[in-house]
Structures are given as C-alpha cells and as structure tokens.
Image (cartoon, rainbow over all chains, first blue to last red; front, side):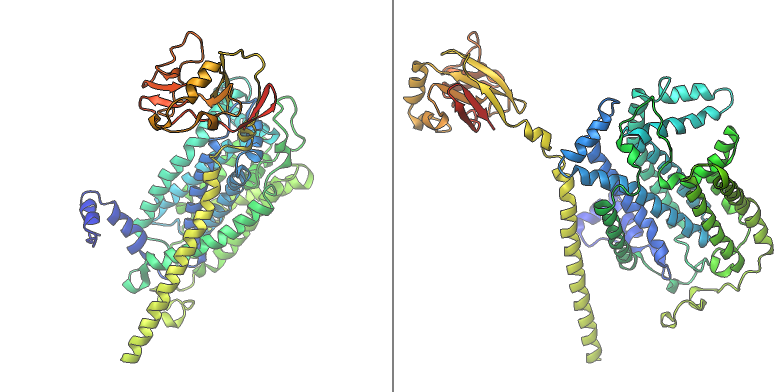
Length: 406
Length: 180
C-alpha cells in the first residue's frame, strides 16, 4: 500500500495525508475476482445514481419553497420558469425510481450468489441500512411537491406509527408537529430529506470499507485464494463499470425525456387538499410489495409489524440460510426457490397496486405468507437437506470459465 | 522476436488511441451534462420577465430626482436644470476617470437616467433627496467609500472606477420611458 508516487508533491502530501494511497488501493490496485459478471455492475451504478440524486436535489432545493401555500407552485415554477428546471426535476423523480430498480437488482444479486454469507454479514447489514435510509428519503421526498398523493401518502405513512400501543397517538402528533399533516410537517420533512442522503453517503463509505476487507464475492461463491484468480480493479473493472454507466444512462435518458411521468401518479399534479382523499391511494411502484404485505393483514398493528419485519428479516438472513455453499450455481434446489421468491415478490408488487378486495386480497395473503415461509422455513430446512453440486477449488476449475483463462 | 514486438507496439498504440478517444468523449459528454445544472442557477423566466418596466416621468419637477426599483436595483431619474446640464457638458473629458460625453449618456438632455449603484462596491450613492449631501461635483456622493459623481453621474473623485451605469431605455412618449 505504501507505494511511492512519482510526483514529488503528491508523495510529500501522501506521506502526511495518505488519502491518495488509500484511493489508489481502493480504485486502482484493489484485487478483484476476474470472473465477475454484469450483475456486479449494480453496486457502482447505485453509487453514480446516488451522486446524481444529490446533485440534482441540491439544485432543486435552490428553487423549492417548503411552505404549504408555496410548495406546489414552486415545483411548477421549477417546471416552467427555471432554466432546465424540468430536466433537473425529472432527473430527480425518475432517478428515485432508477435508484430503487438498481438497488433491488443489487440485493437480488446478493441473494442469488449468497453474498450475505460469512464473512460478509456486516457488509450485508450496511446494505440493508442503506436500503432503509433510501425508503425514508424517498417517502420524505415524495411529500415535498405537496400534491394530493404527497399529502395523503404522508398522512397514511405517519399514521402507521399510531399502531404502536399506548404512545402511538402522541408519537404521530410529535411527528406532525400538530394535529394533522401541515406546514410544520412539510418543513421537517424537507429538512430530513436533505439530511438523509448524506447519511447514506456515510454508510456507503462503511459499506465499501467492509467490502474491501474480504473483497467482492464472485459468481462461483468460493473464496479465492490464488493470485491469478484476481485482477486489479483498474482498468478492468473501471472500464466495465463505465460501460455499465453508458447503458444505464441510455435507459435513464429514455425515461427522463420520453416517459418522465410514467412511473408516477397523475393525481399528484392536483394540489394537496386536506379535506378530500383521492379515490385510490397507492405508493410509488418501488414500495408496492411492502404495501401489499401491510394490507394483507387485517389487524393494524400486525400489518405494520409484518411490513417492517419483511425488511428487517434480511438482517438475520445470514443465519437463516444454513447452507455453507454460497452461490446458486451449486444449489440446484435453492435456485428454483430463489426464482419462486423473486416471482412471489413481483406478484406482491402487482397486488399492491390493486384495491385489496376479493381475489386480490387472497393473492396478497398467500404471497405474504410465502414471503415469510421462504425465509423462516425453506431456507433453514434447505441448508440441512439440499444436496449441493461439487464446488470447484478455484475459478479455473469451474466449467463455466472458458479455457483461455488457463 | 522483432515481429512480436511490432504486434505489441501496435496493440499499445491502438489501446492509447482508444483511451484518448474514450476519455475525450466522456469529458465532452460530461461537460454537456453539467451545463443544465449550471444554467439552472441563472435568472429564471419569471425573473427575466420583470426586467422590462415602464416609468412615468410627468410628476418629477425640474431640479428633483426620483428613485425607482428595477431588477432589484435603484434607478435614479433626475430632471436636470439648465445649470446642471451646462455643468455636465463643459467638463474637459481628459480630466475624467471614465471619459464619456454627457451627450452620450442621455437621450433628452433634461432627463438623466442611471442605475444608482456605485461602481466601487455596490452601495447606493446619496444625492436623490434635496437634503442629501451631493459631493464636490453637485451630483451624488457614495457614503461607503467616498466616491463623488457629477450631474451626469460620472465618477470624478474617489475609489470608484466607472461612471454610474446608464440602463437601456427609450421614450414611449413625452412622459413615459421603458427600461429593459
């Protein structure tokens, strides 16, 4: 690590403040598995979209006014009067969707290849913490335009806390700073929405520190011990990540320029009205699976607990999955359950967008039950009974790696 | 061996060419992407729309001035007396810090219209009210760092480097001007 820099000024500075050698270690020399596939691009993609969200958000904050009488109009002011305001706002709103899409894929990658297993449990935890912070930031941010969906979304979600026995109502009043969602609520939501991204940056930093301790997992899921199994991060993975950025920016651009409102709800272009609830309240698409779990259970407190539990259960996943083999490649039965789980999650999202009545309610209950069965029963039991395929000693013995690497 | 080296060199050249083109494309692309973010901090359409304003001159008597607000700044409109006009016109241009003829600073000699912001560090010079001190040249005096302006709004003394700015304006009719 203590490599000397050719540039004398740099060497002098680095000797006293070793950020350059730390950065070089992390972004240039860091030995990375040579067999990573494109699913490993989503970490860096999440990083770039976080930066884009912070920059676009910062510029929006220069024009936005957090006041119940002015918030909606200030957003329209951004859309019509501010130079490229429409672009920056669409980057920010579509960006939120893209951020969740990327992170969902990133988490799914971890689930498929067993990236959460020892010794990467803390890395996994930090990831879940980032996910929870993202949920908070997205919810708070959605309130700010002060449209109908903003207002009633804020009302419904803050009312979740009223499910807490005894102190629930006092907590909700405290959250609101009043007796309903109103100006004090909007002000604090804006303040917190500004704060959370920087907390995310901090946790991302820890996430990367934890990642670099043992290095990336890889598609085979085995621990890499040979020197030849790894390649320096730069230029091999920098260029691959940049290529990923390019592909992502195309998709991002299509949404920003051609389908900017396709992921949102038109109702939110009606200014907030505390006296009229819109006919059909639904969160943004990325919350739908959890929303479905909330509604599947007919008891208030239990519903809230189930929804929270569906995310918090991920914290104990490294111990619920008792199988020592990480990657799905060598777990033929788990692989099938994995895809059933993914399908189940998508179905949850789909019923989450429907009115919870009739067969939609039945489907949402089945899917909710299965969600928990997957973690609490299938995973522990599979670890005991599944016959895994022979795991190679190194990545070169993996039949999927082409011969030329030898 | 020589052959091998040649291939190596070719590959190296090709790689550095690709590196150069990729990096330059990425740089140009990022520059384009950054522009909307920078431009968003420029005046927005509603601010620019406030940039054009009409002012009525009919109730400013000879020898008096009035201050209006335009783009957040004071506009000094001075109805000059014959004496003030003469004072402004007989000055030897070579004595001025920022030489400019009085004729070039007005459309009608009796109406002097300037932006009332001192060219030193942006304070508003005194001299609009009859009771104000007007400096050594009977025009305006900036209280911040002591710049003196004459009856044509030209700097004559003090740290200010430039004359008071004349905004773009035109007479719509006898008694009305449009600034912006």
